[in-house]
Amino acid sequence: MSRIFYVMGRSASGKDTVYKKLLETFPELRPLVTYTTRPMREGEKEGEEYHFSTEQDLENIRREGRLIEQRVYQTVHGPWTYATVDDGSFRPEGPDSFLGIGTLESWNRLREYYGPEAMFPIYLETDPGTLLERALKREKKQTPPRYAELCRRFLADEADFSEDRITAAGIVRRYRNEALDDCLAEIVKDMINYV
Image (cartoon, rainbow, N blue to C red; front, top):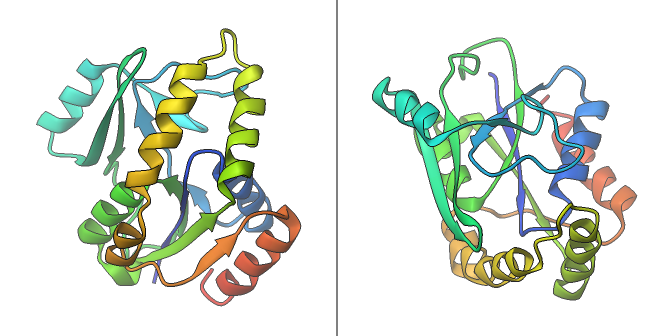
């Protein structure tokens, strides 16, 4: 059976880093690339982190019936949409497993769409102070830095990743990402029997 191994956690919990390291560790996994209307960050590439799209692109996908889920965030720079699309590449009975990255909300929709047996959660936890330090360090590298958006996301994550929502999403195992190598070793140990 194919699976979607799905990395999630609060902003700056290390999702992108863990995701990239897992793709290196398990080259047989295909990336599950989602869509967004937010601006591309420095260092990102089209089709790798996201498919950078317009609202019209997403409307066309919606009309075609291929939209699994979408989230719209009211940022200080206007609304940014994130979406997962059924492009036909993942099938639970198919030959390929995928590695995805997202939120609890997107996890829930994918689990609903494909079934819980097709999904494998990788939930990252990090100390809030560490989250802020990482987010600030990352934002300082952007041109221009969007500090107000950093603050909005941190506060929004308090509600989006509440204990009630984590429990309701069926997340049982959590991975503490304070020391990357230790965190990755735990994840790999748990994944190895399913890849």
